Length: 215
Image 1: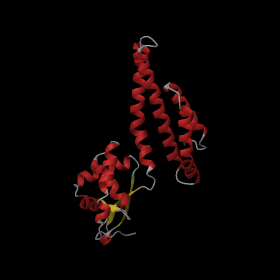
Image 2 (image 1 turned 120 degrees about the vertical axis):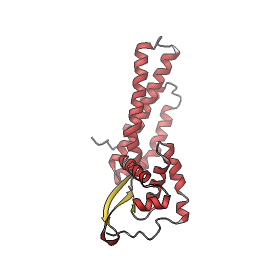
Image 3 (image 1 turned 30 degrees about the horizontal axis):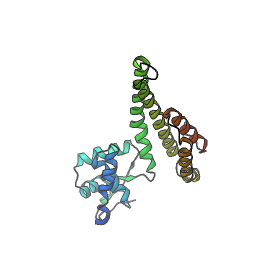
Image 4 (image 1 turned 180 degrees about the vertical axis):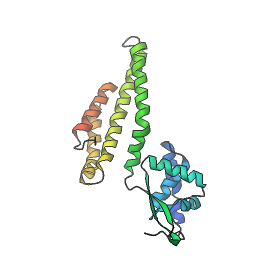
């Protein structure tokens, strides 16, 4: 396979959509240039070399190199070496088809650890300094613990779904998701205790989907 570097990777109309990717990824913790590079690779019909990315987005070589490493770390892109002009070997980069992979990777590598630390703090303070069981501090700390449990349940669901991969089972889960959300809404309606809500959410997700997270 060879790569032609003379044609522009995107039309002006598609380039105008890059800021949407930039803003979205920035809001979930990425740098703006990482979002721009990811958007460029998503919208491009072919793999792009680092030089093409630099030229198209007017970024420095070091900025592109660092961004590509981070996007690779989070499972958003993949890199291959192919034959370029004059038979030289060129590394090209492509956005992965499964966009859910980047979300699940962010959850695994960053959000899970942050939530676990927050939950541990609440449990530690509750255990040693909670005060009266019905006191305001104890109630707030228990609410934090239950909220973290809800967040972990949802993250584990997304991570498990990403592990299933695209196929009939994936499509079945996605098609059943609206029904599951309706069940969650109905099941938790009128339940003010957040600990009970967390238990209901976890149970409903487990009972209404056939997939199991990969070990």
